Length: 202
Image (cartoon, rainbow, N blue to C red; front, side, top):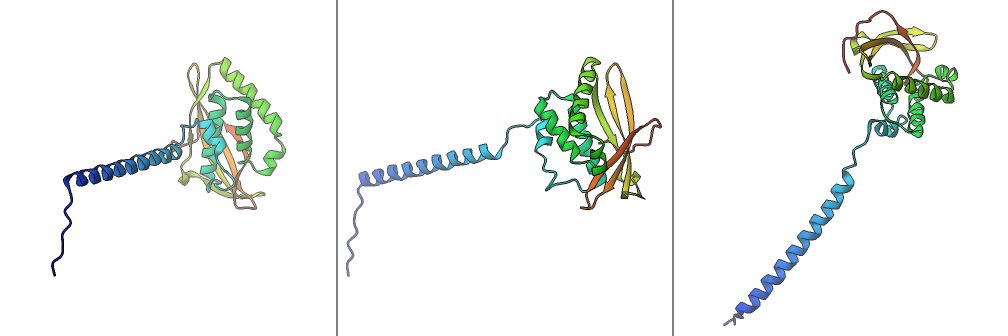
């Protein structure tokens, strides 16, 4: 049986290739445009430290160890005393700070009074041209665990380095208690005069 072969004209071939090229180019443009949109939504704008801390969800992602609790405390404190903040940001940061406190400490420090005290301290720092340059927290190995009336308690030493006319270290001792929900909460802290050994910078 003879099968007739259909001849394709050169003009038809060229037209077909032009159409195919157009389709491919159109698909490429659509795909790259969509990818650009996805990338734009995936890459967030750069946040300030204050915005990062305010957005932290301490309900779902509460710090797991006493040292991690103290890290968040130090970051918030440094931000509160150093950064240019609105009143709303100060209030939100103080609220976030209080999420780290044990109920007994909350009871003796009203939120309004704490906000007002921090605003006053911020003004004092500004007038004296001071800032918190850095902070250090004792290494995990140096944390002391004891039993107190609150239950299991971690004792941690840390320091803030203040920068002004010179450098000054302020040392503090924290008692961080495990509450009924197994979360570590700051129950008490006080300034100490002894230069405690702080072995691991943060």
